[in-house]
Image 1: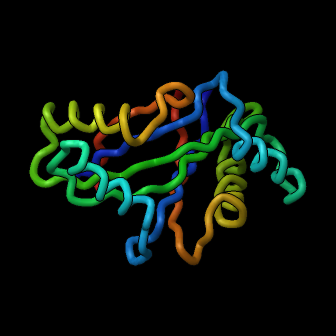
Image 2 (image 1 turned 120 degrees about the vertical axis):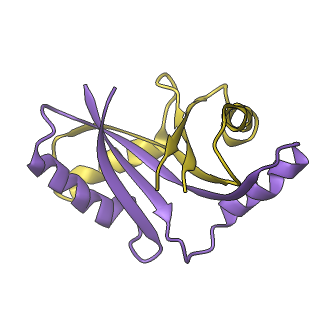
Length: 82
Length: 82
């Protein structure tokens, strides 16, 4: 059954303290080579029936109003086969 | 530049109160047709240089030890062109 996935990430110009905390922990754990980390959210939505254009339009409205804060976050919607 | 993405999701058998809160809010906002919502985390890692097999093996170790809690969460690693 296909899932609709919404990725919500802090905008590039917004400070991301969670990502910075992860980035800061990496060398202490012995990892090198990662130059930046951004942390965001991932939502997996299960829909009844087919993922039509109408369903995707609805998911975009959900992403704008409920799943993300458009002032500080960007989102992306996509369909993933599971 | 390619990004390495790590998706961290609660395991299917684990209760996901954040996802349930989103699911419960949808009808109140006038949305129908979504039957389940799971909420997880998304990490975007920027690496210096090429994404080699060695880099990906490192990212898997980061995902297991720092980015996820393997008792309650699954993770997936992939490379995304930006």
